[in-house]
Image (tube, rainbow, N blue to C red; front, side):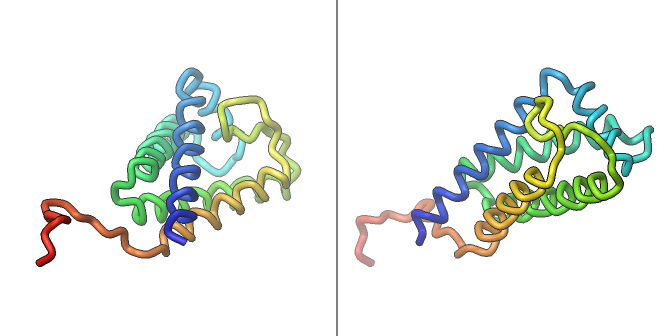
Length: 144
C-alpha cells in the first residue's frame, strides 16, 4: 500500500511539474487560454495564469521530493476541482477553447474533464494517505 501511494504521489507530482514547465515558454498563450474560459476578470488573467503555473510547479516538486506531500496534494486537489469546474462550465456553455493543460493546442473536451477527475482522485488519495514517517536525526541502528 505504501509503495502504491508513493508511486501515485511521484507520478502526480511529475505530471504537474510537466504541466507547469510546458506552459513557461508561452505564458502569454496560457494567459489567453485562461481568459478563454470566461471566468476570470481580464485584469486578473495574467496574475491567475502565473499563479496557476507557480502552484503547479511548487506542488509538483513537493510531491516528487516528498516534502509536505499531503498538503501539496490537497492544494493540487483544490486546483483540480477548479480546473474541472471551469472546464465543465465552458463545455456546457458551448465555448470552443483549448484546454491549456499541458502547454499545447489540445482542445477542451469531456475526456479532459475525465482525466482531471482521475488526477483529482489520485490527489485525494495522497492527501488522505498515512502521515509519512520521518527519521530525521534518529540513529536507526540504535535499538533504544
